Image (cartoon, rainbow, N blue to C red; front, side):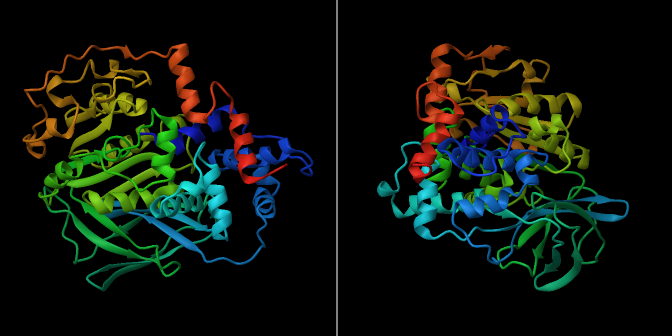
Length: 459
């Protein structure tokens, strides 16, 4: 599910030019607001923008009143998976190198409250304040390029391997593979138990993660997160922004119980794919680890992607993992508000015949008749009906042996009409933009005008 922050930034990345003229000085309110919009635009662009080339980082620090002081280096290690090859295990190691900006608490609260229309810091609970601070700090973190990251792989405290990644890219990202053949790890041929190693880095005390060694056969569960595992309500954009920025993540009722029941089988691999930018990855990983089976992750990244991959990142991640494990069966979880999943999930059944065990899509319109976003079921027309199910609540999934090939609850009538549903109307588009931006039928510029006023920028 494309969560609210990513949906907002996707709107911005499309509607704002990726290379804009840079004013030599900020002499007007519009210039100042342009700085904010271009900062987010630059964060999203897969290629260097004019701002990147002309010192955006220093302008932002000056704008926010930050001194150019040395700040601790932080590493976010994203839990990765390893596959078995003729040369042993092939482990994917990926993550991000960054530094947090030195906000004071008051300044951080000012910026956090400006991120959401109608969201005032004066009405926050402690949980809301902490969530808003963490999300804002993550979104505005400062990526560090050209940093190689040293790692130590261990099992029960015993060092298995030490290695260093290639230098991070301009977004702070790194994504590499490591060949590993150690007697502590059993071979991955045939159906076997998922094995793990601990990943440690000396560069950051919060940079540790777990690596998952996945045999070549068995079942992998691939789950989206927003509105299938956690309550986001992307179709109510202001609610989604509050749910994403200003409150603790709430699991969708019943889904932790369902997912954790599948984790009773130690041969099952869990992989979580979200199109959320990896800057906010920590909050997503923490949410999953607190409520759902532990597993590997993929986020939205920008490194060396084609245009197709930029706008179809979920498909890119899906194809990579299907190709990596050609003998494994897959269970896919998503929801009907997620248009890329509605297209990419059934496409996997065509591209990789025989590998789909079940596609489970939460039917948002069944629980919310006011759901305004159009969705298209056409992609499911060629898919074997016994290998997918549109469900209403987690209760529809109880009692089905998904791990051993089950997929359908025969008491739930599907009644699938293949085609487009909930087409955009003037009213629904107006309501969606009103929810997204906080004003009826306004543009992106008005949103940033609002942010600027909340921050007291430009008069």
